[in-house]
Amino acid sequence: PPWWYNRHLVAIIQFGKRFNLNYHEERFVHEDNSNFTIKWYPRKPLDNECFRVCVFVPGLGSLSTDNYVTQFIRTLCDDGYICVVITPRGHETPLNTHKVWHPAIVDDTIYMLQHLSQRYSNAKIFLAGYSAGSNIVHNTLLTLLTSGSNKIQIYGVFCCCVNWCYSGIFYSSLLSHQVKRILSNTMHHIEAEHGENVKHSLSQSYFISEIDHVTSRIYGFSSVEEMYEVYSSLKRYCQQTKHSPCANSNSNSSSPSLCPIFLLQPSDDPLHQL
Image (tube, rainbow, N blue to C red; front, side):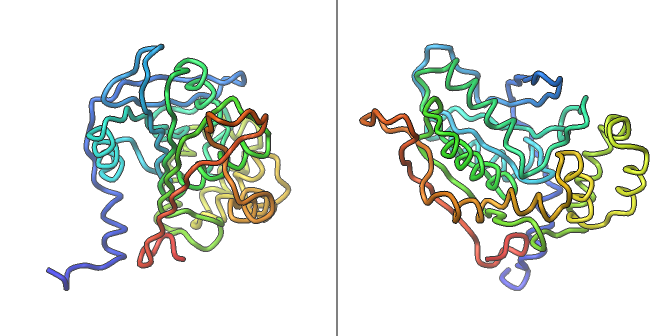
């Protein structure tokens, strides 16, 4: 009934629902031994196959089995796409370095896109993200553009509930619990790299911004404010460009060309307020 609907209740309920799909898993390992996984659905493609693939990046603390993830994947597969979900570091597989996942860092996404474009040269790659995942997608596009790379061709982008900036927009107490759970998987690596006081600092952190005081140190920033300044996708977007890198078969330019970007921002979503 209409009286039952409450935007805060709907936002909280989504954290508890899980639905399993028969994913095909693939693991990637960086040179520094950090690793992450991707999950194909409904199948893993052949090397020379011509197909459309949608790379989906979930939100903070989300798993490939979350309801909104599986519903999105099933809908695209019904339209003929092959989908691949990036499972962020520590979310579904143990971490083996101190480099934790953060919604500002796009290294894993870039690495995986390079793999896709090289291995599946006939694939048309589309990107999609939700919440913190959409910020990763948006920052990925800006990174590809500013690097001047034309090796990765993107044909379209969908971003839902973009966290343009990182401070003051999360359900901090709820999401900080998710982040601390992820960090606990790699605490011994973090302590070895940054000292035992890190564990105490995390135990006393109840908001995302407090946890990011630790995360910012891991990634070499002098303060959390500096990290937010560097990785705010809205700030980067305004400063650097109003375009995104994408495929254009008629262009011989060495820089990325344009592609459609669809940004969806619900006006009543308490986690991602306009």
